[in-house]
Length: 427
Image 1 (cartoon, rainbow, N blue to C red):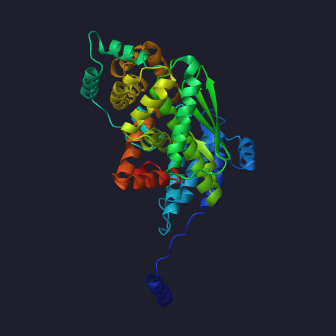
Image 2 (image 1 turned 120 degrees about the vertical axis):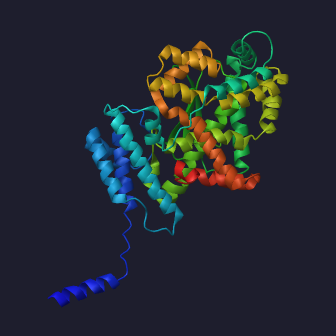
């Protein structure tokens, strides 16, 4: 008996190492979709878009899982997936595996938060969006304000001078629709020079009031978006290009349509038919939408378009376009101030009044604008990082792969929009 046991052990030791079986990603994906839709029962903002099978929506409604049950199910799916994907031959499958793991991790974090667990700003950002958020000293913002001071010179406080200048580039209310539609057409045309859009893609444009956001893309599936623009506050002429690119081309509308065409329809990956807002996918969505502005209108091309087309359409002085562009570049870098204010406010280090005062100091917002920003932070919390940190990470990714070659830059950008890449894939 001992010799038989020893022989069996020897043969087992000599046998090739057993390759772990690949998890059934399709089965995990279907369960993930049902859990994501179930999370929407606990937070109406959780599901930003869904255009997948009605059967999965019906199953999620029927299950009506509690938050602890969703957490347990998500944990179970992580065990099923394992730490890594065994087959390294197909990079897209590796990314798909990582995507499901990362998104499930974010779901667990959000379930913990909805269940009453208190996380710090940095813990929340890491758990939901899978990134470490850099912290900037006060001196960083002060140096940027000094640069802006030279762009908007004159007597009095910088905040007053900046707001007075911005008042000169606001679109009259009766011209907003015309300016926006021209900006959208231009962003679409420039995007189509470099990317093939799905046949039949389209969007509807609406103007709304009373929302915590400035604009929103509601993706409906079948390459169709509803883009809403908030008109609570005056809209500057440069925001027309910002929002047209960010919400439309090559931003959210193109990103969602590309995922639907290439992954949902092309590969049958049902997990991409649901978009959980509080997840690492949002860093890619917002980051690519913000950097998409620079892709469509790099450098002086944007300034020239605004000066020659949008300023005249809005009845504004085209001579202000260059100064406005210089100020915008600095303000984009000052956007990181929102992260610092959100961190201090959500961590209980400053009050609401102090937070609005900091926004007025570091981002030169009016009291109305600062109040609106704080309302956004109250609603979406650490989500603010996706706009600036996300943009920086996407920019670094495209710069690394494309360098100064415009063709290669668009190839890298297009590949990002058509894949399940997440923050870890940008490093």
